[in-house]
Picture 1 (tube, helix red, strand yellow):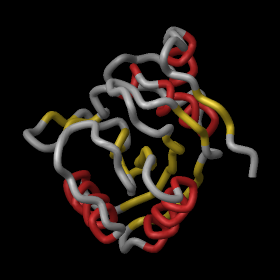
Picture 2 (cartoon, one colour):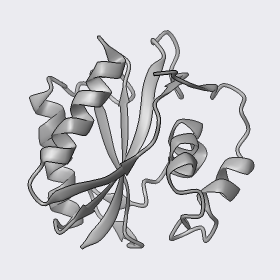
Picture 3 (tube, one colour):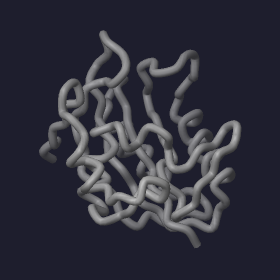
Picture 4 (tube, helix red, strand yellow):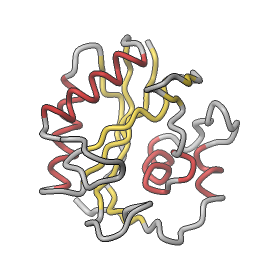
Length: 163
């Protein structure tokens, strides 16, 4: 069994409910056991302008699936929820990113683990630090807390959603 961390985000429709639905589907997915999840956060879009804010969080799962099969399952959940991929960084009903898969380093055509931009994104690191602050990035050798401490806030505002 491997521990995997999944980034969950939405900036279309009922963003918070979309994230909750994805978390529920992830919990029910064959070969996956939800072991934890962060709070939900309002976040500013990164890399694009003129988009609605996102709701983002991170979930941890224990899984016997391979990294490739887990990624396929995440893409199926996105598709089942109505996501249609047209272009990079467009607004999305749901986005499920495989951030980490154990301590594995994978660099394939359609799968890179750790997620190649996670250490540059507050919308990933803030919920990940809440969930697992001492988790070590397998290729950078720093904890998630250390990575977050070195990341500027400019343009990457993150705010806790009070539930």
